[in-house]
Structures are given as C-alpha cells and as structure tokens.
Length: 571
Image (cartoon, rainbow, N blue to C red; front, side, top):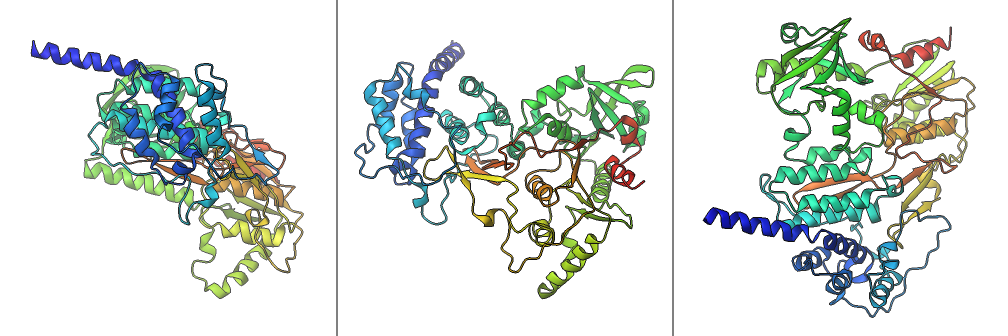
C-alpha cells in the first residue's frame, strides 16, 4: 500500500510538471528577454539567476503569459530614466532579433506588452560593463557527477541554452526552423528525467540543434557520454573510414582479434549490432553539434574519437561484405584497461597522428607550408632575428614555381599568414572578410567591424612582392575556425590560387564560452564571418574550386590525392 502511494504521488508530480511545459517555455523566453535587456539585470545589479530560481518554483499550470510576466517583472524597476543607447553603426545584422513571441501574442495584455517594450526601449548598454566582465559570463553550479540536478537547475541550464541561441549565437537564422518547438519538447522530456544520464541526453540533443562545429566539444563535457555517445572503454581492433553507407577497414591494428573474426583490410562493415551504418550516422547527428554532414562523417570516421559505436559493450556483431561474400561475425573490442593492448593502441594512434602532423610535399619547384607546423621556423630563433629568418623563407618561396598552403588542421602560429605572408604578398589593405561582432548596444544583433586591425596588421613602409606562380590551398573538414579564416585571407592575397579538397568545418569565428548548471561548458561560434560579398561561411565552409573525392583503394593505399593534384599540375 505504501509503495502504491509513493508511485501515485510521483505520477501526479510528473503530470503536474508536464502540464506546465508551455508555462515554462513562456517563462524562459520572458526571463531571457529581461536578463539581456533590463538595465538592473544586464548590469548585474540584480542577479538574473536568482530571479529565475525564486520564481520558477511558483509556476503552475494555472499561469498564463500575463501572470508569468507579472511574476518576473513585479518587483523590478519600470521607471527608466536612461534611454536606449543610440546606434552609430551603419551595418547591423538583425536577422536573429524577433520579438513576435510577445509583440504579436494576443494572450499578452497591452499593459504587459508595454512593460516588455519599455524594457527594450531603455535597454542596457553592455559597453558599460566593468572591465573584465563579459556578456557571456555565467555563474557556475557544480553538482556531483552522478547526481541528477534538481528540476529548477535543469530548467536553468535549458534556459541558458535558449538564451545563447536567441541573443549570443549569430547564426540562429540558419538553424533548423523547428528549434522553438524542439525546445518545447525538451522541456517536456526534462520533466520526466530521473537520472543525470537522461538529462545529459537532452542537453546533447539540444546543443546539436545549433549545428555548430565549435560546439562539438560539448559532448566531452558529459559525464555519461560513454553510455550513450561513444565507446571510451573499448576500441576497434581495426581502423576505418566511413565511405557512403559502410565502414571501410583501412588498417588492421590487432591482427589476432581480426583474424579470429575473419576481418581483413578492405572489408566493408555495413551493420553493427543489426543497425545499418547510415542509421548510426543519423542517430549520432542528433547527439553531436557539427556544422555540416562532411564534418560529421569526418568526426565519426576518426579512430581516435571512437564515436561510431552505439553502445559500450565489449563485443559487437558485424555484418561484413568482403569481395563478393557477405557474412555476420562477432568481434571482441580492445579493452582500454588492458595495459598491453593499450600500449599497442597508443603507439598506433601516436604514429598515425605524427605522420599526419609532419606531412610534407617535397619538390624543388614547390614551397610547401603545413599550417600545423609553421612555428618550427622560429622555434630556436632569437626574437630580434625572427624577421630576418622569415624574410629568407618568404623570399625563397617567392622564387618557386608554386606555393602550397596545407590548411588541413589548426594553425600552430597565427603570425605566419596574418603577418608575414601578408607583409610580402598582400595589397596594403586586405579586407578578405566581413566581421560581425555582438552589438553590445543591442544584444541579439551583430555589428560590422570595419577597423583595419581586424583584417591586417599595420606594417610601416610595406612593399608588396608580386607573385605570378601557382598557388594551391588544401583544405578538408579538419580545417576549422582559424584555419578557415586564414584560408579566406590566402584566397584574397593570391587571386590566382586554387582551393582544393573537401568541405571545411563551417565554424569560422571566435569561440564564446558559457557555463551551464552541472559544471558544463558550452562553446559556440560567437561572431559572424562572411565573405566580402556577404556569402556565409558558417555551415558552408570556405569556397572550394576543386572537390577531391577518395575511392576505397586510394584510402587503402594511403594516397594523398591533394598532393597528387598539385604535382600533376607540373607534368
């Protein structure tokens, strides 16, 4: 009888919470609006989180939009003396800012619409924040990793993600149009969770809707990622690449295990535990934030990431196509607690990474620059000798028939392209992109920054050296953020350049970090980077002149088709 009563109480509580999902949505939309625009909250005079936590407990299914607005604004100052900061910028990006949710809502009284409009009309100027403070600063709320957060803190975490999308993320306008409805369904799911793991699944799915490769790191923040996202305890005994709808076995890392399962190099894995590879890719796409499908496939193909598996079990059932034969086999995975196996695994991954990081195209007619490996030019050079050393390197490159900039990675030294390549080869003004930063006078919009220092360094008595040789820029999905940005610069510096390979990560621009309750850190693209003609780079990536596609045999033979393309230009 006692057990029945407890279950009944729990059921009634869940029903009570479920009935409030629309009220929670209205509450969160209103709270974020007040948080970013009301002068007392935006200036941190009043703690926005406290306002949320105190009032969210009092939201019931009986509340309507008007009572929610009353609860949130009832004790706030509504007699404003300062007017909104005047807008001086001529180019303001306003696509994301939309207040129809209250301005065109018939359920909100004219009095409450006036209250919200007045808050916006007298909005806070974030340029007045004290030095060292940022719009994106959030309080930390650590909880034990295994503890499910109380519902008010779960709601606060979801509210902050909604606020990021509405006010801080410049690319909301290219997110899926159904984000608001999905957010409502997330509030519904949140009311039902009984564990930290279930809540983390909600977080992962919600962040994935941003479609931002900078937010890809978020899955590393999740305590239960091993249980639903990737297989950290076990690794595949073979390396692989996703090609179309199968895994191509590219290397045998543990021959004994693979021989036992009859797995050979060149085999196609079409199913894992009864799931088709295409189905697994779709499932992962709903858990991982990436800007485009090319980037998703790239990350899922990473042996080191270990993301292709659907569960954390030590054994998998694989459907294999080997030549003309198709069969099903069971295979044991590599246990990361086994020191002997881990040593083999680590050596394989380290050797693979080292070979890639230090790759080099050697040809007497070509100056080759690997963006991962440019700091080596000045590692052992005294500061007062750096200019001389770099001048020698650049002058030598200028005498070659071709220059190759390999941007497949992340720059280890920004000064190489931004300062030295610009100094010797660029016109004096290199406006190679349009930079839209958060408009602190009107959060939720973004303002074009035209100051030269955002685009090129100031160099006195600059003398540009004309270069008529061939220029190749190599990119792929690993070209992300700064690598994409420098690629755009190179494209402008060298009009004759040819950009080759695959779509880039589609996440160009500075990273913004926001703390969420539960000790999570959300990173995302914080500004808008466009080509000068306003073509977008977010999700799309940089412009590519020639797409290069690999066939199975190319991958098995460890070919670098990009290098081959460059060398063929001289035959």
